[in-house]
Image (cartoon, rainbow, N blue to C red; front, top):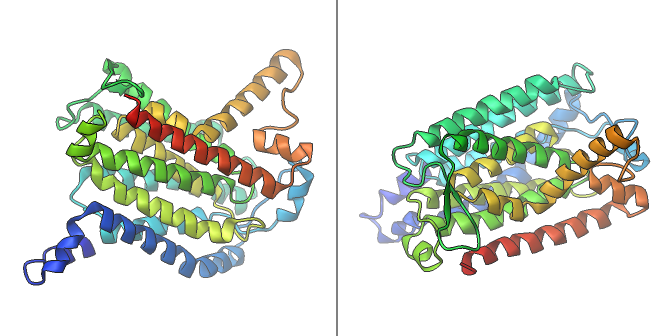
Length: 360
């Protein structure tokens, strides 16, 4: 909105020309999302508590979490609102990739909202039935994957980019659609599984947004993409603004979600943010790099898979508790120590993902 307004005024006042630069608008998107989250945060927290949208702590979780009972949840509504406002103000809404990302954010957010609503208001501890939840996610991811598979503007359609190699592409053919579903749904649920202690997931999302933002900007820049031997994808550079909005919203939400948390993001936040990261990876052909930059999410997911498989096959558990962040809590690590150490590993993995740009 403001982007179009200000940019059209550059003929009248030349400094307005600065709004055509993605980097400038990304900075504005970060600031707008942070300010929006910080300003609306207290009001949202008060309303969620008033409407009884509060957290129910499972009996089989770490004992240190029992004190979190009654903390407002569904804070993802605040995150989504901040991202949408920021992108609407500073993003180019004529860009189809921006519209797809908004659709993914809202679509997965709605699924998470229904799940949270059933848990908080209907007092159903399991929330939305697993088949309904996964089914809705798969349908949404299928729509996104089908769109890209039949996108006439994408010259690399159905191609899988292999990091560390110069434009080494694998043609997935029709398998591209189920592969994109796996990436998007897997990313959505990986963030959801990681969201178990104060500030952990949202901090890692913010780190992933920085890494992905750099990759997106380079992919959409003809000069940088040629120099670094990255696929040049016209129009994707605009997604840097979206990444900036996600990063700003993550920082703003962390203000209230840091230990001890005043609010939790809930499934409405974790599913929407995870689904957005997965969709972003599919758009930019960086699906494998997503595994690196979101390595902690991957580790958390596999810890659950290993734990369940081990118990069903042998009757024994590999970890004291899964996901793995609970394992370290049970071992005696204080919650803040677990959070910060996982963030440090997340930063290292994000930096490692950026090395794939030069080692090609």
